[in-house]
Image 1 (cartoon, helix red, strand yellow):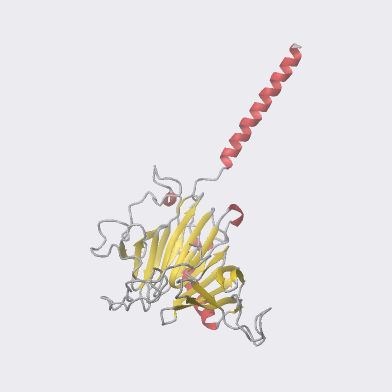
Image 2: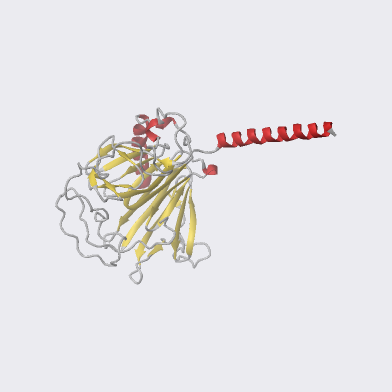
Length: 363
């Protein structure tokens, strides 16, 4: 009987020890809490402004400035542009007359410093990125994402969203001139991008592989201010399942245009040059004590334009007013004429814009 009790006690101790080791191993393998990732600005040219989406404060963007989620970039006309390098290795070049909002950028802290972003082939940790191109042009180079762990990267527009897993791409979303329609173009030069949008045939997902693109016109429906995709006619025989020579019901990938290929090549060269000169350290991504997981505090002093006293008077509260005429964004189907801009280098700012009501555009 005594031997049986000893055996039972030894078994219990063994089980308890195994459970402790298992719990310890599980704890050490648990992923770190995601923090707000850091973004560095480079090759800033012309009129480029940084907007704090919370305080609405604006300030000129300078080389070396840092950004986080809930910031936006607005570029002027002409040669205005900027390159933004994300701490997960992704990089975007924002073209002239553009507005892009960083709706979300979270990532696990770095395990080692990144001495050369260009040398990365995969993202260093898990990340979640959501960008919103309100209008303009963006070229992106995204390192292969850790999709199995939950990493995501998307660029939405009022006409639809592009889901990216690791690729080089270009998105253009610009008004046609009448204020009620926009031309959309998504081109891929590396990897695969998935376009997601809603057309007259309903919600659709269109793969856009290397050397292909989708292009269409996004019309604003004056009845409800929704956006309707109008793909071009596909070939003399029409689209699959449609009438001969009739319009396609959903966007279809076509060979990339020479103009898109040239723009991608030029922007990619610039992106790689910037990546070679950009580094990130573990210290830069350490959250400030007391910051909740996923908070936007980086443990660094606020950059200009993020609510600091140095913001020029009269620039706060202008977010959302720099859209070009006809940009979907508020409640008026036909916006009134824009007042002449005070600065000839900056685009006009209309007083009211129609609402963003596109289903499936990532909002």
